[in-house]
Length: 199
Image (tube, rainbow, N blue to C red; front, side):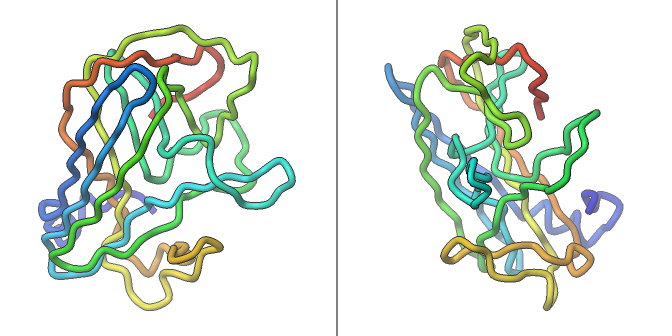
């Protein structure tokens, strides 16, 4: 479902959702702490439980705690639905599972990335021989996908404990991408030079 920018009710919700991020770069790891603050009067659902397919075809954990890319010196981190790859046929979408955040509540998460940080997308598998070039970021930003205005029948249980799966997007008011502001972040990133598509 496209973002509901034309819907005034959805835009009113957007203005009451905030994403914050704090990063700490050390020699061997990048620590990232995020918050999603829900100042609305409704429960919202955050795409924050990433998963991927294992070689066996079963569902398992991803190669990274968040989707990652670097562009123009900015380290972009995300837990949201990724755009479908341009020019590639997608047989199965890999959308993160969701966590409900009650009105007035704050979702807090902590993540750790090995340094150098590697770009990651569930649609572009990294191979051992994927060509990369080291670059240094100057800032970082975090984005979450958030479902607003959901009604009964929008979600079903996910195969991960405590998570939900979006099963009917027509029973939602909209899916928003909410970003933090940019924060200083000086860390080495391995920028991919293959067909990887950034977001």
